[in-house]
Length: 98
Image (tube, rainbow, N blue to C red; front, side, top):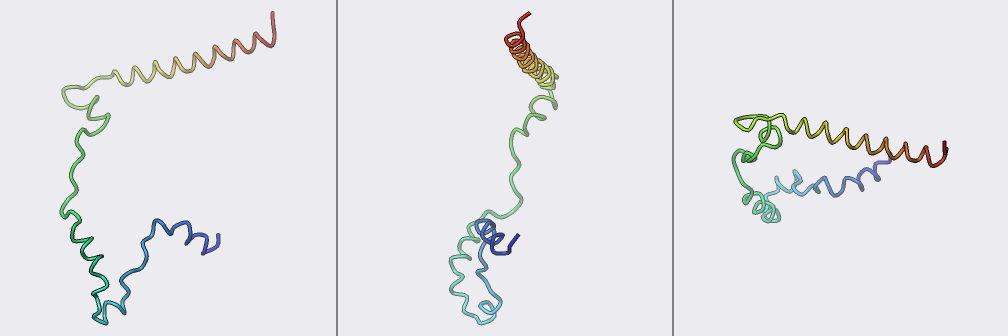
């Protein structure tokens, strides 16, 4: 793959190089004021924990522990498979009458 194609594809993901070493060492950091303001407003400290914890916490851990999701998943897969098998069976009889 060409380097220009990769640069174009990653252009929206990779931020542009704003703070160059020559800009920082020359002492004219006034052009970086908006960048510094942006980063100073970001939250500091550890990330907050996600409440809920997802399916495992809801159905398999704690006082609400249950095997119902597993049973419903098995029944759903069986029903889906049966419906597909039934449709194939009908197509077979439509094309090959006995």
